[in-house]
Length: 329
Image 1 (tube, rainbow, N blue to C red):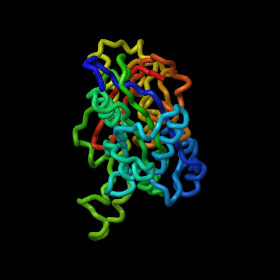
Image 2: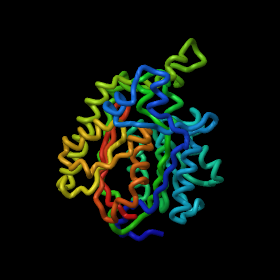
Image 3: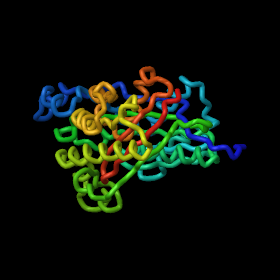
């Protein structure tokens, strides 16, 4: 059992998965009033991955975790807690985390979902770190996964150009030195009308009336853009200030991959060099809760041990935040 010595949560393994199927800008040109040039200029996205019909968010989460386990020689039976950040659960109940336990034959694991939209991974990461620091859990897995394409009207160019599917997983363990340093996580409930999926819940169930049109994701891009840049920038600057860290000491900014213009604007607002802002949005699009872990996974060989990372996200609700961590792989 643990001693009384202070222990910190560290990332000790990472994995990821994206579907093989690609929805390119050329594909979208054929079905909606848009062009490759228009999409790239407004979003920086060239293609996005789309999970096949008959597969669900849990399937991608399982594959991301299996990638992690095979790469870092972890053992499924060591998992104490499993946290899934998702806005696209397999079904309203049971939780996607519970379904994953069934698919992986995991018994006696504390498994649950967190839905904070695009901020979900940061929320789940902080929860996972807190569990480890409580000294009650030694091996906590946090997965950000979304099959958001299931909620996108493929004919709606305000959303079909942005979103794709994927999953990223991390493994947290206790260590005497810092890994996860701090997190600032916020929400205000003022953005519901500007970014939402109304249908399928208790307010607009599909079995009452004609609520099928409410099944799709809707957003007011201009309002979301403005709030995302302001909120992410303020969260980054606030967490740096309270930890007495200068932006020049941050090795990498890892922002939520919503839009390349948002990424660039946040980087400019907080004063970090453009080459220090990691992004993979061009080929994956916005994968909701999966964007940050997928970006970390893709760049794991580029990020050096002990690098200081600043993570930030913004999502529906509105929800937003920032996290600081030392890279420990």
